[in-house]
Length: 346
Ligand code: EPU
Image (cartoon, rainbow, N blue to C red; front, side, top):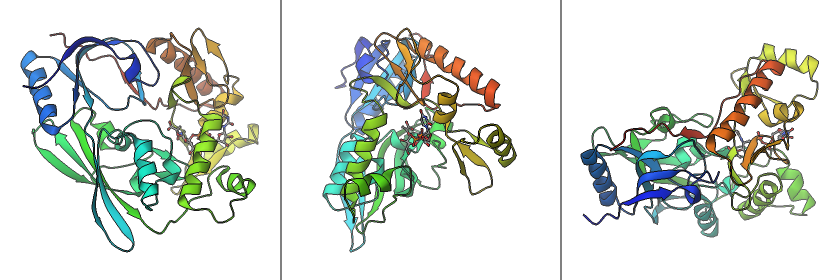
């Protein structure tokens, strides 16, 4: 077997929150065959498995007594194209933003609003990543997975992935399937989505009057860079909470007390609130407790100033959750995956 299994490897460089825990066993896999060998090894040794992609949506709370499998399957393949669209298969280990830039350079649109999201292509369907009014599901055709229960590969249609806001079957049945590749269908004629936030006004300020998909990508990168910390400079896992969805009645009551409440009516009559707004109102923006903090420019993002543990970040999150519940009767749900309970020692 050509696997290089390392022992006691620090995961600090493998999670964007830069939490320093270690993996008892660690292996990078570059092919389906290596992945299958790694899974077989773990089974034989009786150790649990933890699948790692870009590590950008992860809170590690303890050393992992597991085999951490770092998915490094690479490659982008144009499967077919006609006058209107292209069908592209991307391997799970490709970097998301690099793929978005590649697609735009080829003249394919659709993913421009999702520029600069950290992480890998294989992790993107788990959360159904979304930004500026576009979600991954809008352009995803299917996902190829290895089903660990059957040992077989299986292709799931977008519908079978059961995508919802920051949710999917991969999140709900965590650990069951390993995402190997994703197939996208991208239009050649761009239909731009400019209605979220300051996107349209930003482009106008830049005197971009007839924006292309590439222009939108540049604008999204600039807007993100203003508010969201670059994990290379200030460790973070993106939005730490989901934006909560509440009943219209509840939203109405809150609006009476807080006329500036930021809310978005949903198709089913419910109302989505901007959690960042609630957290800022409650006075948490910029708060620092040791090395764990609330980002000074975006209250939805928790940051690690250097030495924070996953537990310390979660303790800060718990205080915020309790305070928001007390003030607004709104429950905030943590967005990233919390991991540390993989506890099957060899
Ligand atoms: N707001 C505040 N104070 C803050 C943060 C936000 O008042 O500290 C207000 C803003 O003024 C705005 C509203 O809240 O009116 C929404 O803010 P923003 O556009 O920054 O987006 P968000 O709802 O905080 C979501 C996603 C982000 C995504 C942006 C843009 C979630 C959980 N987060 O954040 O995704 O980039 O919209 O589409 O849905 C991520 O998932 O990791 C992520 C960064």
